[in-house]
Length: 510
Image 1 (cartoon, one colour):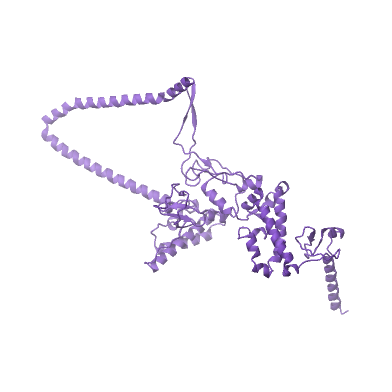
Image 2: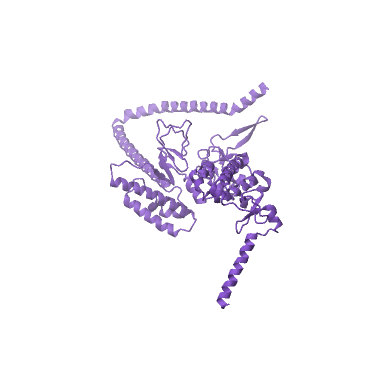
């Protein structure tokens, strides 16, 4: 086996060895030829020098002048080419991410960083006119609204500096919807720049971070940011992507990164047969595309760091909580949508409530909490003791007792690991204890009109049922014995009919 392996290594290195030998021979041959040519031409040059000394001096002066003129032309052409390339790069940077329908207006909309106040005001006015012309929910209108906000922030900064030149510049920088502030914290873990993917050394490097989407960037990279703020994207979309990995293919992306636009190519392995042994040669300089499982787009290694996250579409459709690889932009969007109650699970996939027992438990508990809210919202003692705020918490979970249908990704994860049902049971027990012992809340209890029992009934009791019209509460068994008819509703209908008859009699003079 060792002999075979050494044979494989020798065959694999054989082309390199042959190439090196040929290269050394060619270099030696070229050097020898140059040496022979110099040796053969040297006498001729010497003979010409002996015969035509005066002519040589004049010719050398003319040649020197010609060479100097050519060098000046080359330098001028090179400087002109460099200036044209810089202008072209500036144009590309300024027009990056602008929709195709607004390319003609880019010189009036996209301004340099040293633009004046009148130029800013003209660009803002042009943006307002174009916003009114564009169609609703179009890419052009969304881009114009984002750009209009950015221009207004920049105009405010210029006006502040113009009114008070000695004032400190504002700390917030608005770029593509990002609100960048100086990052003065020294985290214990490594922080990488979301633009160049390099490490941010906070001790020696200035950096900024977006207060909306946590986009971290070097100070030197802040003007080159090309990614739109994830908070803006999630606000415009208002819902997570509902399809599972909506892949469109590299051909549709023209084999370029979906974010930065760099060229993508596959790391193809080609089989090579040599002396009966099959070997593989790989292209090590290829940029391997990376698929984002959330958006279905392909990214380069600088825009896709192989981060993993739970995909909301897979949870809703397949109840799949396996983390999958997503791009940086998608990861920021998922983090912003993680605690927002945007998923109407019963409308999207009602069969999950039959297969997942935890969802049925959560739905029953949330229904009881919404019924308890009617008592707690008007109770003065509950407000003084801050019962709801201390039990439910902040705004991320207030929706649990405000509605029954809407869920967030965090809620579904809590159903899967069992933390959400336990949390709702504790809240239910605390609220029920207060309602039954509170003087104000217990005074709003009901009695069953069918059996005339003295037992206090509440809508959230397990053995009670509330009428959907008059909200009266009775025992479930009593409600079934009365042929599922509410006595209070029947009494109200009789009273309403009597009032109508009295009004008709008064109108007829009876």
